[in-house]
Image 1 (tube, rainbow, N blue to C red):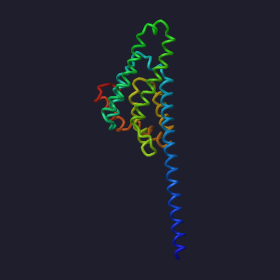
Image 2 (image 1 turned 90 degrees about the vertical axis):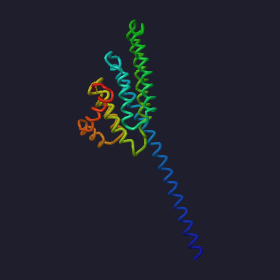
Image 3 (image 1 turned 45 degrees about the vertical axis):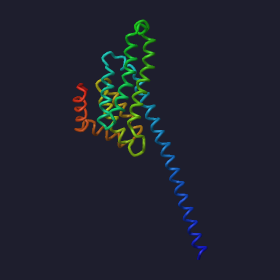
Image 4 (image 1 turned 120 degrees about the vertical axis):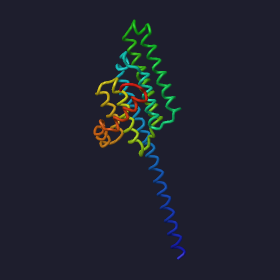
Length: 211
């Protein structure tokens, strides 16, 4: 009887140990998966923005307004003001580089050389935006889809004044790389919904801009 009890206890302990080992393994795999999603998001968005550097060359583009819009967006989604302020300052520093470059003598003397630098600087701008987003999105399996859903749609709204429809659709496609087909369908279904329009209206009211 005692032997049977000891055997049952030993089997139970082994089973618990095996379950704990599986949980640890699954947790590690999820963590690796989250990092992969984070890396994919960063590379996709960075490449998307940097490859379209020409929209930054346009003199009618006011990057300060884009930065301010993104700051207001972060605050609207519950990000602490100090974090949003830091993000805004980082974007302003990048904007300062663009202003200095566009008015530089080298830009006027050698446009090809200057545009090559704009490509480099536009990648820096893209990396800054990615850093802002990474600070603001919890890259875990549960909140990723929700975060991408919210921010992808609203960044598309913010940039829609400055870029082509193709660019906006490309941003939405970046979101689809990370989420599911149902997410993409959701974006297209609700892109003209009252909720999206209300958010745009709130951004207009907060920032005083026509988006």
